[in-house]
Length: 68
Image 1: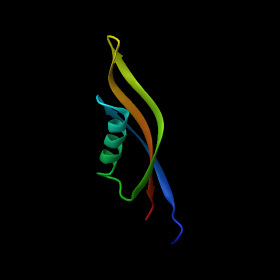
Image 2 (image 1 turned 60 degrees about the vertical axis):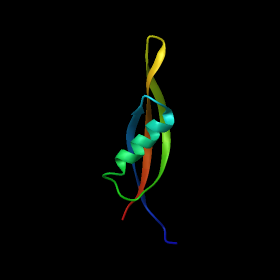
Image 3 (image 1 turned 135 degrees about the vertical axis):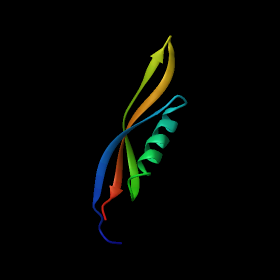
Image 4 (image 1 turned 180 degrees about the vertical axis):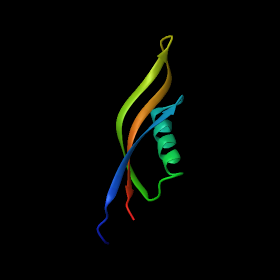
């Protein structure tokens, strides 16, 4: 196995359902334009509350992709 070099980019995913769905949305959307995604790291979780209930979740995700 050869050594690899990675680059990081930061994206924010959101979901009305869950933190998990917000992460999956962020990675899925990023994979449409970024090749060689190999890992992610959750940076921050936040959300929006309306009338005492969670309306949606937002997750800041660092995505690591291998540089060709």
